[in-house]
Image 1 (cartoon, rainbow, N blue to C red):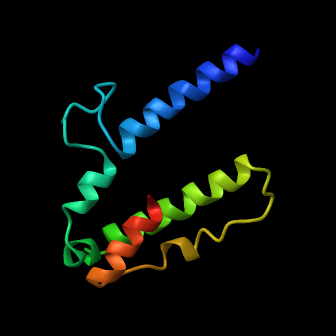
Image 2 (cartoon, rainbow, N blue to C red):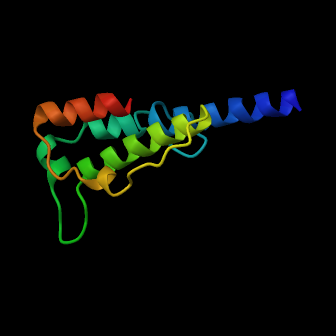
Image 3 (cartoon, rainbow, N blue to C red):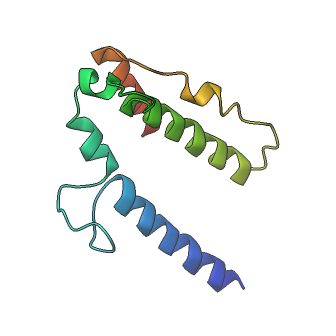
Length: 106
């Protein structure tokens, strides 16, 4: 069983690296892809833009940050509730706030 757990952990880590940092060809095909690289190419103004009922990129990044923090907490035994409504409260960000949000997600 331990070998299976280690295999699952290893495979999951590879997929997370592909998703967030460095495409390895599992499902992303751009050599300079990954979420972090994509977010770095977006200005604070663009990240703050909302259209109709569509939330801003900044709001999505904050929601993702809260999700990842909650998931990490749950994996470490936390049992508290997450305020999902508050996780969408970000609308617009300054350049400094946008950089800080990206850093916090990382």
